[in-house]
Amino acid sequence: MLPAKPYLQSVCIRPDAEVDYDTYPHNIPAIRDMGRMEFHPDVTFLVGENGSGKSTLLEGIALALGYSPEGGTRNFSLSSAGSESSLHEVLRLARSFRQPKDGYFLRAESFFNVATYMDEVGYLDGYGGKSLHARSHGEAFMALLTHKFEGKGLYLLDEPEAALSPNRQLAALSAIHQLVEDKSQFIIATHSPILLSYPHAKIILFDGTGLSEVAFEDTEHYAVTHDFLNNYRARLDRLLDQD
Ligand SMILES: Nc1ncnc2c1ncn2[C@@H]1O[C@H](COP(=O)(O)OP(=O)(O)O)[C@@H](O)[C@H]1O
Ligand SMILES: [Mg+2]
Image 1 (cartoon, rainbow, N blue to C red):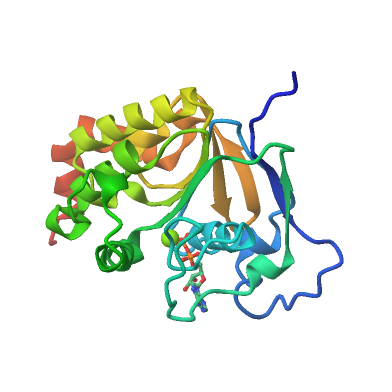
Image 2: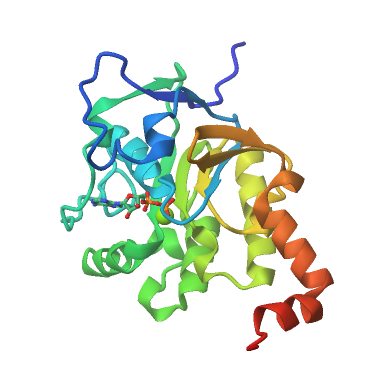
């Protein structure tokens, strides 16, 4: 039998698309030179400096798949702030013959809006029966991972660690692994060295030269965190030196 995963195999800019490299989003170096991004069947991490284009590409993929720019499931149509780029119109997605049975697009910055919408429509069963507003941001995200995500899904997450304590990041890693074992695929933009350590994954670095694959221990996230925690007194002395 052919493997069902990855649901999403690759993404590239349509070769025949007419794009303006002087304006957003095609003026972002990683987008301009992205070539073809091949996804891992389990987890693909997007890493790179702030402003390197991770959210722009994740949003483009989500819109091309039919999600609202504000995030949520594909059934939710939230009004958007209208700030989304036109990238989705020129993306070519290669997909598996088999559709995922579940899916979610999480934008950290508009999770509040999704929670409000869910309160309004009384749609809380999938989230453990309690308003997401009545939980902390981290609790709400964990409720999403453990109650709402059903498996056999394609999940797009933008910096999910923003809300999570280190312990919760470990719990999130375990929840993600269970979903992966249940035939799910994730694409996750993150700065979290804890999440990036997940072994069934591929890490794609966004930088001035486009996209490239990088090993966990070669990421800046690993190197900087590792070095800082091992030498924090000396690093602080240098960082905070007023002279
Ligand atoms: N709606 C927009 N219009 C114009 N420029 C934007 C817009 N959204 C983001 N940008 C710019 O595009 C670049 C990439 O942003 P983004 O994809 O959010 O980066 P990342 O998620 O990697 O931090 C940044 O320089 C940002 O200022
Ligand atoms: Mg971002």
